[in-house]
Length: 290
Figure (cartoon, rainbow, N blue to C red):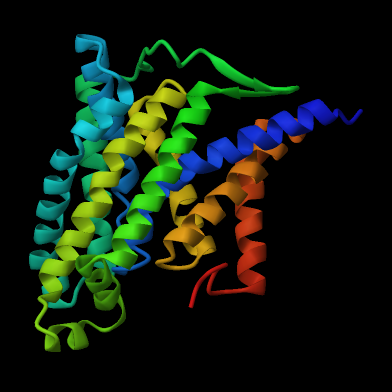
């Protein structure tokens, strides 16, 4: 029997989950959508961020969001170094397609094995006073463990959108995605612009990791669950569209939540990719693609 209260709660949970999916997908939206670099290792960096946040929370009682923000400079530097290595080994030689893909697969497994050796296979979680509380709006309950990641994810998306659209370096990043030669004629170095963009994409993984471990316990192999979701959100929203990434993330979150509530969690991911395939059949460039 259909329950309106159950439907409203599932819908609200889907919207909140979508805000978190946006945060996880931002790095892919920049690296793959704007730079055409299929960084399959991004979700494992999200997991790495989650474990760094766990360490700071368990040892020093630091707030998860604060810890995630504090680690963003580290992830920025790691992203810059990773792109430097990728460029020197593959992109400069024109071998970035298949070999570059294998390179990021290798990075994924190296980081995942490192996390397994350090933390084991046990699930880890963080503690904060507000995580177990909820905000109630009539019959709809909004748990803070989902509400805060949603607000943080939307805020991170808005900040990245403003940076790309309102700043010189942001416009340069969009320019290098369209015509690197023209950007060079204007006096900008495409390599440095792409390195900055990839570093920014990697920096988002720190905050996304903090949000992930707030939602629930994590273990190293969980990163594989988000590879498909992140790329699906990026493609569905439109390659390189930050606003489209948010809309697509909300759509997939709602689709997963409603399906999991009424038909079981096993169908959640399948329906999400069904939405992606249907959208691409109607509009191959994605919802907001050029």
